[in-house]
Length: 157
Image (cartoon, rainbow, N blue to C red; front, side):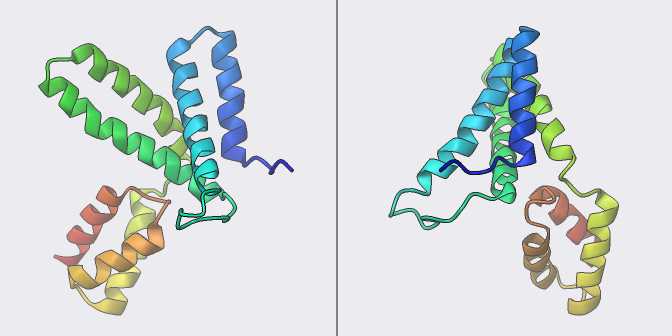
């Protein structure tokens, strides 16, 4: 029995079709890679050794996969530049731009993150070590860890 696709997957598939019609190979390859990564996570959950064995895929999982792909690109770009491979760095940057458009809608703004972190600071005091883990847990999947960390540092100073 096939599972219901999440809105993010439906959007990725629709945009992949549009990219194929427009002969935009980079966008098509990037979207196919994202869809394959989601599928690979789903398949990995059929392995009894996987800690998430038999758990159904959620939309948060799909967004987490996209975040991981964005993180990979962010790590690869400086390495390609350092190695003098500017054409590969540009390709990774283009893929990063494409993937980030899908995460923007699910990501919280800095002001929303500040509100959550301010509430945690009010509860736990201005100690970074107490606030950061709770903020990361509460905002998981809705904001990038580096952004959360920066705002927590700013508000616990």
